Length: 73
Image (cartoon, rainbow, N blue to C red; front, side, top):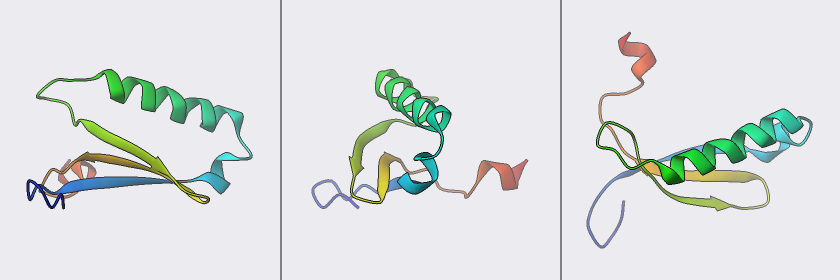
């Protein structure tokens, strides 16, 4: 939760160890970051920040209530 505006955000986590062995996975993640940074549309989840530490990469995204879309399909 952002303390300034009391807004909830979702965090998507990618484990670096799973990508170290695959150049394709690394390129796909970089492409996803590039695309998400450019998107700005009401019908698409917005990515606000990208952070990383020694073990993970974190995307801070808009939070949508209701659970996983897959479970609703």
